[in-house]
Length: 141
Length: 118
Ligand SMILES: Nc1ncnc2c1ncn2[C@@H]1O[C@H](COP(=O)(O)OP(=O)(O)OP(=O)(O)O)[C@@H](O)[C@H]1O
Ligand SMILES: [Mg+2]
Image (cartoon, rainbow over all chains, first blue to last red; front, side, top):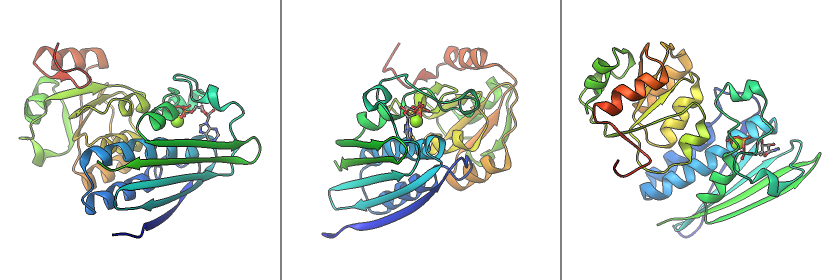
């Protein structure tokens, strides 16, 4: 497989039943392609955290995924409120999640740190009032 | 430890996974915060949680966790059951509170998933 397998998903905002569906599809696809369990785990964690962030913080968004023989590139795009201070948002434990979000099991402020930790390349571009784009690459081992 | 032993130890009600009673589970983690669960890549066979919504099942699936223990007698929703059945994840529920449920399982030899040995 020299060219990429291209997948796109709409991620609905504030829907906690469908949340994670895109990550699930990607995980299944990687499994089918015979990617190692260790690599799949990293992709699953990073993409799921990013997907949940779009659901919770941005009113939904779009996941664009390209799978190559040796790596995966995941782009998560939303038109949400944006992140005013990216360094602060990347700090372990920092969260703006409300109590009702915490009651759902999110808001530990560990999502972005987890995404960074489990990917080989990680980039956030964000503009307040416009939206956020997160680009992640995991090299398969 | 087999799933059936865990069900007995916790006096748990089985909502999903009766056919997996002989599944072997060696380690566990417990949290109500899903990012905490996702922060440790070690193989954790069992997730103990006071949280009861579809994202608990999704989180478990992302980590290849095969069994969820709900504490304080929580009853899984139909959405949770649907995902769990599709993914082959067992869901059991115990009246124990989180601390006690963890204590019982730990005492009986189920180790923490985020450390090698104790
Ligand atoms: N897509 C996004 N749009 C707007 N703000 C975001 C987005 N992603 C993250 N943030 C902001 O960055 C903060 C930190 O995100 P992070 O994922 O680390 O933690 P969290 O989502 O609050 O909690 P957790 O991920 O542990 O459940 C969030 O609380 C939110 O303020
Ligand atoms: Mg998050």
